[in-house]
Image (cartoon, rainbow, N blue to C red; front, side, top):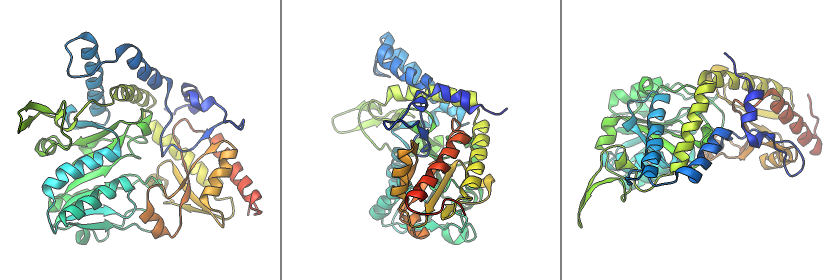
Length: 414
C-alpha cells in the first residue's frame, strides 16, 4: 500500500508556511533534520504543561507517570527496531553522543597500543573524530575501507584491512552525502572472523527504511530521533546486552548508581548505568509519538516513496547541463539523497539563490571533509527527501537551479 504525501503533509504545520520573502517553503534538507508532525509537537507540549516531573525518583503520581511514559518509549523503540531487548536501548543526546559513549567506554577498555580501528573514508565526522581521539590516546592505528567510483564500499581487500589486530569496525549504513546504502554483510562477517566488534552509524538509514537489529547482528547501532520526526537532543544507542553489561560507565552522577560511599560507588543495572543525570524526558516522550507515526505510515512505504522521488530527481537533474551528480546509479543501493555540483558555481551561491525561491537544501562538506578531499571538491549541494516530499518539490528545485544558471549567465538546458 503506497502513502499519500499530500495528505500526510497536512500533519506538519511548518510545511504550509511561506518564507519571509513570500515564497512557499520547499523543504529538502531532511538529511540534516526532519520536520515534526502535530502529534509529536503536542506530546512534547503536553508533557511540560501537564506531566512535568523528574523520572525514576519520585513516589508521587506525576513522577511515576512520567517514568512510565519514558520507559514505554524504550520498549517501543526496542520493538520498532527489533532489538534484542529493551535493556539494550540506551537513550543519549544523539548519534554523536552515542558513538562517543562507545568510544569512551568499550573503546577505552578494549583497545590497546598497536590495535586497529577500522572506519571508511566517507564517515561523518561524528563517526571519525571520536575514534581519532581514542587512537591517539591508546596509540592504536586507524585503517580505512575505501570506496569505489560509484561510492559503494570496496570490500575487495577486507582481509588486509580487518585483521586479528582489529578491535572495532565503525561504519555508516547510509551516506549522508551521496545517499548510498551499503551492504554491510561482508564487513560484518569479516569482523566476526577476527573477533572485532561492529558499530553501525545508522543516523541516515534508521529514518528511511526498515531496520532489524537482531538480523543485522551488529554489536552497536546509533541513530538520532530528530531525523525521524522526533525532537532534537534525543539519540539511541543499541548494544548487545552482554557487551553493555561488561562496559564501564562513561558519565558519573545521578541515576547511574546503585550505592555511593565517600571513596567508591557501585553502579546500577542496565540501562541506567549508561544514562547518568536527568535525560531529555519531553524529547523521549515526543519520540514515542514519532515512532507511532512512522509505524502507521510504514517504513517500507517510506523507502519506496523516497526511491520514486530519488529516481525522478535524478532523471530531471540529468537534463540540466553543467551538473555533476554523486552516488551510485543503482537505485537499489541508494536512499533519498541527491548531491550535485554546478560547474563554475560555488555550492554556497547555489544554496543562497535557491533560498530566495523558498527551496531549502544543504550546501558544504556535510561534515565529511575527507570524502570531499577524495572527490576533489570543496563541497556539494545536497537535496534530501522524506515521505512528505512530492514531485512538485523536485520540480521547484529544478526550476530554481535554472534560475541559478540564468543569474550566472549559463544555458539552462543542454
